[in-house]
Length: 258
Image 1 (cartoon, rainbow, N blue to C red):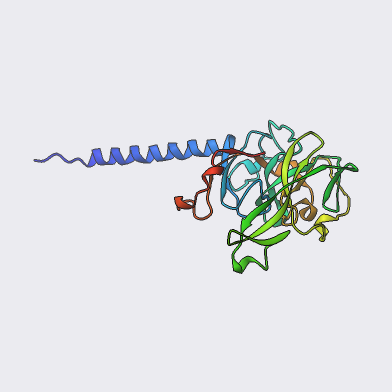
Image 2 (cartoon, helix red, strand yellow):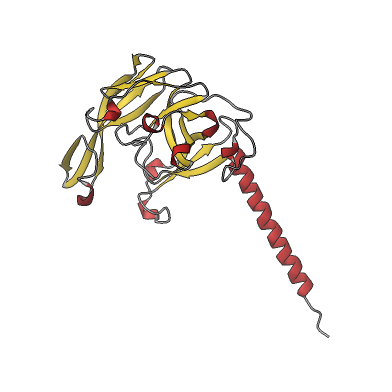
């Protein structure tokens, strides 16, 4: 009589299930305690971050809160093993005013700071930050996007219609330098704001694309508990679906985020 191999099949299937569970647990631990991948869906951080950039965020940089865990379960309040963020860090955080969605912006104001924007220049505790004009940020535009895209100037270069945006190097009080864009030449409320006093335990964020960013000028200061982590490195960048490798922007691969 032939010997049944049903037992061997069951053992093999059980081993496969255990392997998958172990792999998922390892991935979950890595995501909670070390690094979490994020993608950039909007242009609010141009030219530092572009739509289609995929990056890693370090979860350990500022300690851990309930938002370090998937779905933000209310297991505890505040942060554990916390460390203070530094002005100029690019940070992912939860926006309570937008259904706890993930936002990514640059940290501009620390607890106790007074922040105001006058004629497009950020004032921190009454002192304007340094702004140095450099070459324009230029990107091609299609006909359907011309009317909606904010541009300092629209022009044609080598037969291609492009949107040129004024670009500056902004230097913060702690010496951190980064790129910012200005497109409307200080004509909107984003460029001339009231004074914001950052409460204790909160932080003030702004996008590098100053005229196209929903940030603390609109949503207010962000509690320390809502910070998820610091953006560290771009590991992949694509102008379309990341599976369409012919649209990858190889020059942005493994680029550290300043």
